[in-house]
Length: 424
Ligand code: AOS
Ligand code: ZN
Ligand code: ZN
Image (cartoon, rainbow, N blue to C red; front, side, top):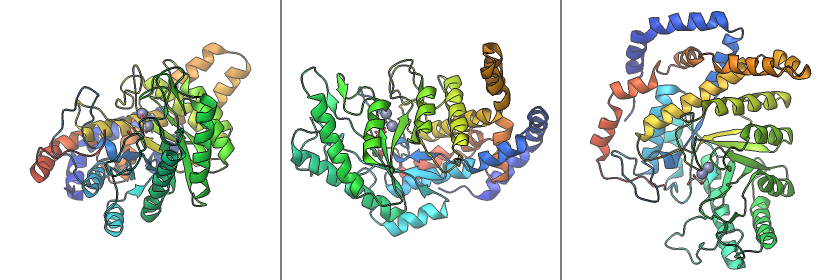
């Protein structure tokens, strides 16, 4: 299914006046509105290929309808999102769930929809039916070299698929760890993992990045071999300048100060990418901004401040990806909400009066520091997002248009009710 431009125009015509009224009001309040709008137009968030179907939990999966059954259909779904918001112009693939059978036609389809290929992900957390050795006791950290070698080769193969599509980063998330004390020698597990990473890193193309994603627990519950940002940073530092830490917002122990982690990783030039989601308890993979939008804003403030300090390009110098999916919403509506929440927080971060905050910090004026941050957080930036969309020929209200056009019904009509997208 494709959304023709005139449907977007019709929708926008109806909502234009109300939007202009709101924009005028906000622009009078905000000194750098024009600059924010331009930055918002540049900012794209990659959609995970595995979030286009309904997510499952370990208790079951209530399959949605009209799910994409092929990589082409996944790209088409992201094309729909991108047509609606012009902010989702990238896809992050997971191999082997998304092996491209015909690279040329996949590339052509993506190009036609304005979608580029962000980081490719390897999967050594599941056994595939034709593989020789099991990952039951880990992959890159495994005590047995032949298992590690199999996992290394898988990662190298993922890089090849990525190269063919024009991606330039690989994300490695390992489920490796232990569930009981005594199961592992921590030092040996670290060294095996490092050695495996080194073999992959050696074969990384010169213009590629390697993102090392950490996670505090799950599926292993006693130790994870890349369990926190310290361990990820250690691997990345030992590997070299193309290796970076990837922060997934759901991968910390409760109440961790993620904004501080982000700030220090950026300071070290070692923050590579992001997996956005939200959570109440653990790796809940909920819609971005649905539980704790203030934390998201604080993280974005550190991102913007830290990137500016290093003269980084907000839109292109980090990998911005969503990693959220669950089982009660329409996945496409969920992703529209997530992208919107990310961009709201980004716009709010751009609003922060940095000079005033710096002065308050210098004076130990704690009250004023809070005021400066919360003034930005409490500003409604949505009209700026809408204006950015309008200028990019996207919908004033993507979610409303998605429903008005009955996109899901049409996808069900085309694909049926029983297809199940690959993923978890
Ligand atoms: C797992 O918890 C991680 O967030 C990974 O990023 C994983 O590769 C992804 O969620 C797909 O399962
Ligand atoms: Zn993740
Ligand atoms: Zn996760």
